[in-house]
Length: 95
Image (cartoon, rainbow, N blue to C red; front, side, top):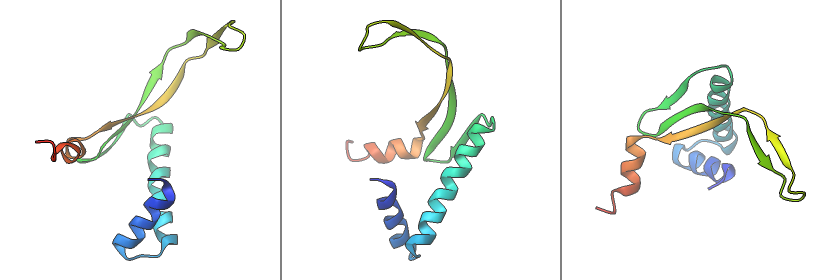
């Protein structure tokens, strides 16, 4: 499911215009992104999951074209960990 499909589904289920649904989705994504960028340790949505930032250290990689070594700088990456409710929903048909 992509963002447009998610927007349509939200609009349909909440009986709101697609423009308003898109605004809500964009606002939620912006709030989560801004919180993580500004140094918030984590953003948790109960029963859905937690968004955090992980620090990757610098390492030496290889350019696949030239096979030369390159330095890959340290960086921060976003991480999502599914919550208990989401995990249970995914596995309830397996039991």
